[in-house]
Length: 240
Image 1: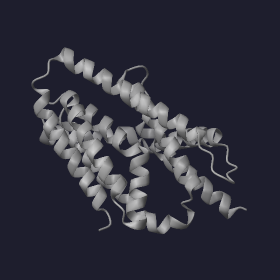
Image 2: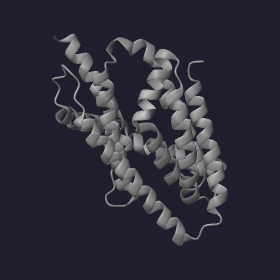
Image 3: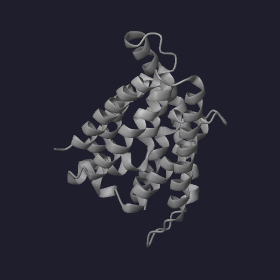
Image 4: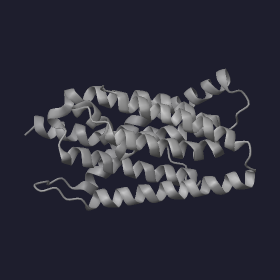
């Protein structure tokens, strides 16, 4: 069944978020702060590791300068996202859920936005969704579901029930990629997928910086950057 991987992924996030919310009530502010810092450090390390690994990959016959394309993707994608103002729309969605469903939850929007971005921009979200749409294979997304479910418990224990609601952007984002995969299959080379994953890793690193409160980066507005390598490849094919 096409899309099953994304559905299971969303359910795992909801379950983990609900479980983490119960744990939250038993944690003092001191412990919550320590856990958040540990999460931020872990996310930062994962982002740095993925970025360095992506920059180090070399595919035979590939001539694209990975570093330059990554920079261009982040800049162009950031400008496009700023025009659309994705971050503000995510925050509005989080605040709407908070007003309608979870009144009095002060960290709802933070948990919703942070978890949504972490679960959407990773390499497993991109590759797994493409595999699901192209071959029907759900192994990558099932593995991601386990990781997301466990991390959702930890995130929700510190940031609240908003983490569980991040399942909605996951359904839209991963489901959209899965449905579109068949249409864009001819242009999805290993080089394009790896470059998209590289940009995603750079954004994960930025999320870690946000969680650690080192510097406020509008990661949501940079989401379009993930798709710039694909657009770049299409353009090179058309104008050869």
